[in-house]
Length: 94
Image (tube, rainbow, N blue to C red; front, side):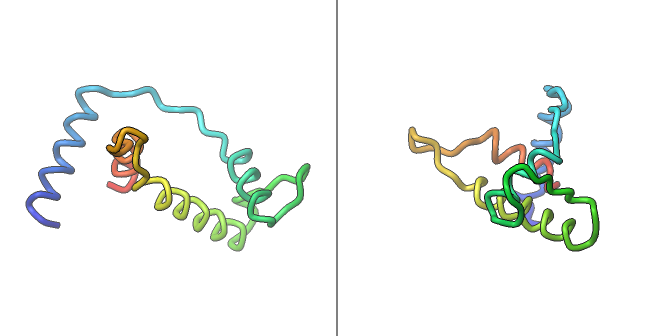
């Protein structure tokens, strides 16, 4: 990792320690079910259990990664970027 990268990660960690945020409530069952319906893996009314077996887990991992990669570089309407979304993604990756 470059010197700049190390400084950036350190700054993010320090910022997080100074201004902690509440842990969000995440419902993986509903989130992955909605994604699986959108992807055509299941039909509406069915539930996608991402932890059922290796196949569903790997599909869920790819969906999770694809969504994160897709959303991270999105530009904000005013011409900048969505810093909170990018910072959150970097925190999870770090």
